[in-house]
Length: 396
Image 1 (cartoon, helix red, strand yellow):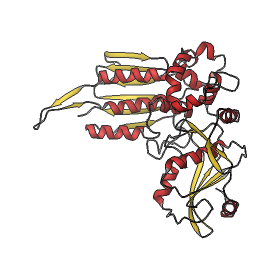
Image 2 (tube, rainbow, N blue to C red; image 1 turned 90 degrees about the vertical axis):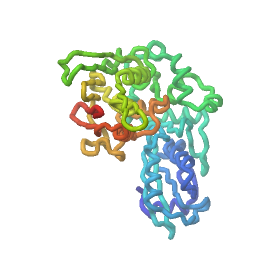
Image 3 (cartoon, rainbow, N blue to C red; image 1 turned 180 degrees about the horizontal axis):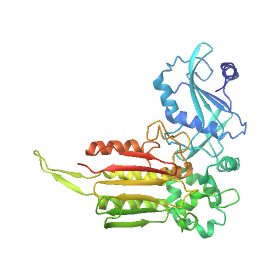
Image 4 (cartoon, rainbow, N blue to C red; image 1 turned 30 degrees about the horizontal axis):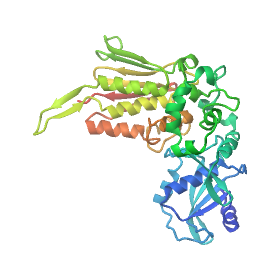
């Protein structure tokens, strides 16, 4: 983070396209918009933008108490899933000009346009505003392609015309990813819309995310991009098979079909004890759904032709995902609430826009709670060099 001397100099210079003051510590939407605008860096300063929480419009001290609770909330802006792609930012408490403030320093994004709930915000001098279609196009052209994750790379040999289902894009994907009023205001060409949503590269090639989310035949390009389900009549893979399926196609179709398949295989027992009869499943559907979606979203699509596997045995089931931990997530902190890192951030963004995720980083926590509430043992996770395994045990 910038030094106290540098931060003090910014305060004395007043608000600009790199500096904002606010006392609205409780208005998280405005804070998200400010972070988004700095991350977009439309003026192309290539320097961080700074949001001072606890100063009025003139830079005067607002007397805001800056405690750990506030700092935690501000830090959560990075990964709560409302700002996409994830901004690079730091949060700190500082004493500047005899005033206690919370400082949010936001780095320019390698992957603009950054948006809040589908809306793109920029700095226009000392004020923030929603970007026009032309400004979004300029932001798209600023992407630093060499620094982008694999799921944003172009797929060599693929084309929009022959390999993407554009009817699905227009009727399903686009209305879910972009607010209706924004679609109405910005009547942009199809190519510009695809670029703004990180689905094609600057030369028009579909990205990995586009092929997996909208591809006519994703397995042509990524042979392991499917879910393999097998249910065994016993505790070993050599036992007779009761049910099996191979789920292919766009990732959204795979997850919808997986939901149906999982529900079909859940058994429900009637507990007749007490005055009320209660039906209890052997596994809670919510836990199975969240762990399956995690496996599909976080898997390694770059270097593995192995599918996500769901192996359902008589007394337990196991979900395996190709690829080990990534980024800030380690074998030691895997599954903990504060350990969030995305190998496939654009796929995760697409999944959230298509309503397959409510918030980022809570899937495992939701699964744990659902299992506990249902009376199942806690899930067991095993992280290896090339796979992550989640094992769930049947409710006793």
